[in-house]
Image (cartoon, rainbow, N blue to C red; front, side):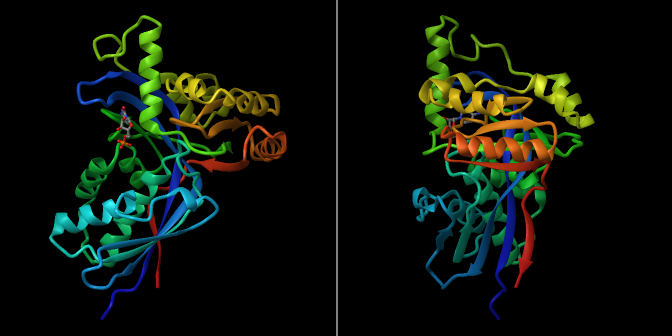
Length: 313
Ligand code: C5P
């Protein structure tokens, strides 16, 4: 009997603190990365594939023209990694319903990888222990473990070593989606270049070790948007603005429209605005969408749960 298709829903993320240390010898940067999952979701459905065909990717949604449909897609890599881990055939059809902005700094590709991993695990009846799933996630990319876990978490190392955080809420956000993405490696390179240019150096020896801000962890715990707004910080923001100067106009528009704070999400170019309540978030989204400074604006609340099986047919 062929196993029934499995659908997994997975959230986007925003980094409420992204403290970036110096460049390590392996090219990555040590982080203090406070992840918060937000209620914008992709869905990945895994269906049994024909013997020998490997992972086959299809996608639907407004932006799917720019995502790869071959084995360079992180969802396909997740299926291959799980199959290799168990010594089973990687035959699966993965359909991605894409709502998270593509290459937007909201971990959309990582989300699809975590969702594909969970969906294949259920489809193939593997019941892989959580720690092993998290280890496979970490091999796939720095943000993938958080997409599996959701909620709020501190990511250390290159972001893959997670400590769950207590989080109240809801926090109300607006996300302004830009035209075109930004490459994460290019933004980190620009961060290094700006640090060198300012004479500070860019290696682990030059840059103070990143650390989570206790005031920010308190703001998450108490669910206070005013306290959180006062301490939001993204060390990649200057680099994203340097590569995409027009984002300054987007940030200013949302702040003028009533956001408590604005910041670039991760490596950008999506801009995140923290609102005091859901009504204000809806108004900020309307103002941003009409402003011509972004391609669209989406209100969303956090925290959100991590990758979750929502349907088996
Ligand atoms: O881990 P992931 O594949 O998402 O990383 C993509 C790229 O982002 C890396 O190749 C590296 O250039 C950069 N990166 C980094 N330091 C991190 C995470 C990512 O330099 N902590």
